[in-house]
Length: 539
View 1 (cartoon, rainbow, N blue to C red):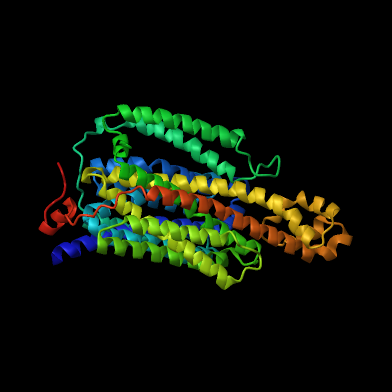
View 2: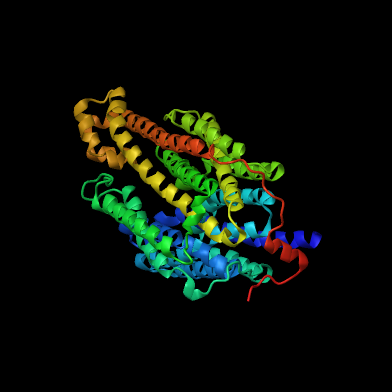
């Protein structure tokens, strides 16, 4: 048993390293993007640096999950890490925005393997009862990357060069490659041939998800011709989302007829699996609202730097890590999960409701308490549902089950952020006149300021901007105007958390439909092979 434990923990460490590689990249790059787009003179393509990565990493998730069942976890992780490293190195060498966007897309092609295949590997290594304990550490890796990433990205950008933001992935990735190549067996779980795989399904899936994600991305952007956020009815938003929806329906038809579908629809016949996947999507809608909007609140209302704002949300990350690890430990100890997961949804509801009361003058300690509660409600979904979903599928389908879960969580997050952007913009337009009037600003001046509403949401020298656009007689009112803008911004940020509240309520209702079955202690195949010191390859 000692040999078995050492072997499994060595593989587990290598898998965690892969997870850290992917999650750290996102937080490191985010801090450095303003400097990067300035140097490469590409502010008009700012969002595409993120979008290109998001597109390729999302559309490949189910493909990697299916292929890991057929060709083995080791092969897919090596391919994923390898592509990610090549993309990282080339991104660091980029001399133009087009090069950077293309190489970030290549990075995403590799990153799509890391999360789902890593989770499937944990399912291979540990029994259903044990998985929660180790799945919980995934949340810790995510939280640590959010704490370390902004500091590393900011320091490298300020003291060396933004190019090193990408180069820093290389030593971490090479270490992960060496560990995976040395320690991880390559156990093929499905006796399928390459010609049997669902290539038509892959093509239709990619064709469906790309416009869907681009449409959701446009929803959070400003239309340069109007100065306002794109409407849902715009062709770049509603048109692309509608096209993606139609192609997804075609994809379902293709999967129903495929011999080896990349997303086996028969898995959804299991009520517990279907309910769990639905709950994961709903938690995804609520998951990143605070992580995205609260740094913006601190930068705009409290006037802190971009790097510092990342650290002001530490309670969310602490709650996320604690909730994920604690849930995993409880599931492993008691072998039950339903009331732990449902309880976390209740905590999410409490935290989201508290955050709806956000105001410009909310005390930091009070706000940190609210964020901690919110994080404790979100964290358990990361470990809990992965453990539950894997317990409802056979071993040879852990890859597709884990990838479907990861994909729907990511789509839920994208949809949640798109809706949140709309809610925030509408709330700000509605709150700003009232807040300005409360500061003694006259209606004619309010009419002038409303034309600058989009600019007033930004960070930087807003007082200087106001001095430039307002007549000289209004300059003494700039402090009151800024106070009114900050009040409207804070209230609008609070409104965003009604989305998390609604999604959390739906997740609670859905989670109550899951059966509370006892998790088994049976040892999975790869763990048994490791214990016996045998090869796990299938010829």
